[in-house]
Length: 553
Image (cartoon, rainbow, N blue to C red; front, side):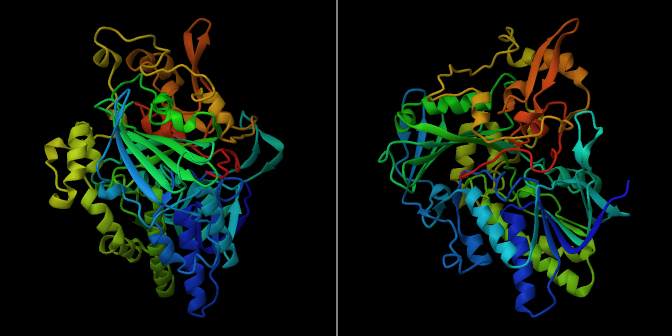
C-alpha cells in the first residue's frame, strides 16, 4: 500500500502533560539558543487536545514552574488553590477523621484543576511555540530500521467493521523522526510493544489501579472551594487497595471519585459498584443530595513505583509520563512528574540532536537525569508502598507511615511483586462453598439514577463516541476461552472490571454463552488489557478521534 511519509526532527506520541511539556521545552530552548526551528510533531488520538485527559485532579505546580515560570501571566487555568485537607477512615456506617493530615496527602500550595482544560491550555502554548499538533490521529505501529526506532505509523481510516475499505478510506501516514518520544499514557499500545520487543520491563511488574470519577453540581455551600477530602477503608475489604476522593471547585462543583487497585483477589468484585457504594456512605451522600451528576470517566493509573519503571531509552526513542509509570501513588499525584519527565526528555533529545547521536547510549542520559533529580527524590522513598498493601491495609498503612523514619525500606517477604492479574483467584478457591450467580457481583448495589448509576448511564455522561462501522479496537485473541475456561475458572471478570459495560456474556443458542463486545462504549481506561487473567485482550486505538470527551474533568 502506498503511504504518505512525513519527516520531522522529533515525533511525540500523546498530547498529555508529558508529551506537551517535552514539545514546549524543545521549541522554546531551540528558540532561546537562536538555532533553526526544530520540526516537532505531536500525535493525539482524541478529537481535540485534552478530550481523553482524566485525573482527580490536584496539581502540584512544580512541574509547571519549571516548564513555564510565567504561567500566571499566560492565563493557565489554575483557578482553585487548595484551602484545606481532610482524611477519613470509613466503616460502613461511620467515619473517623484523622487528627492530622498525613504529609503525603497535604496539599498546601497545590491547585484543584480540570485536567482537560489544563491540557488544552498546554496545547495552545505548544502550537504558539511552533509545534505541529495532529489531533484525531492515533499511533498504530512503531517503525524500525533494524532495532532503531525511526517513527510511527498512524492508523488507517475508513475501514468498516469487517476491515474492508469504505469509500472514505485513507491509509495511515508514516511519520519518520530522528527521535520519537512515547507519551501514549498508561499501558500505551505503542509503549507496550516497545517494552516487549526490547525487554525494557523494570525489576518488578508494574502495578495498576483504576480511577472512576464523576463531576457533580450541588447546591452552593456544601464544601468551600479548594477543600480536598481523601478516604480509605469502606467499601473496600482488608485485602483490597484504594480509597475515595472529593475535590471542591467553585460554583458548587465537586469532583468525586474512587480508586481501586487492579490486584484484588475476588473474581466477582466490581470496582464500579465499589464507587457507587462509596457515594452512599453517610460522609458522602449528604454532600451530593439534591445535586446532579454531569460528567463521568474512568482511567487506569500506574502505581508500581520506582522499581516498576522500565528502562526508558532505546535507539531513537524515549518513554515518558504515565507510559513509563511516573506517578507517586502515596501522594496520588503524577501530573507534575509526567511534566518533569517530558522536560528531562526534551533536554536529552536536544543534546542528542546537536551531537548527531541518537543511539540508546546517548539517550541513556535521560535515565541519569531522572535518577539524579527531583523525580527520584520523590519516588524512591515510597518505592515499596503499593507493594506493601498487597499484605493488607494494616501493612500498607504501616509502610507508608514509617517512610520518614525508614526511608521506604520494608521487609521483602511482606511485599507483593506479582502482576495484578496474577492475584485474582479461581472461583473455587475464593468461594469454597460455591460462588453466587456467575452473572452477579459480590458487591452489587441498587441503582436509583439519582445518587447511584448503572454503567450504561454513566457512559452516556462520558461523552464517548465511536463510529459503529469500524474494526473492533478490543482484540480478544481467543473468544472461546471466555465461554469455557474463563467462565468456569473466574466467572468472566471482564463483565465486572470494565467500568463501561463493554464486555457482556450473552445467551448463544447451542453453546450456552458467548462474549459480546460493545466497543462503542469504551472509555479508553485500558483496564481490560491490564486485568484480564489470561492476558489475551489487547487494547488498540480505534479510528482517530473516537472515545470519550472529558470536558471540564
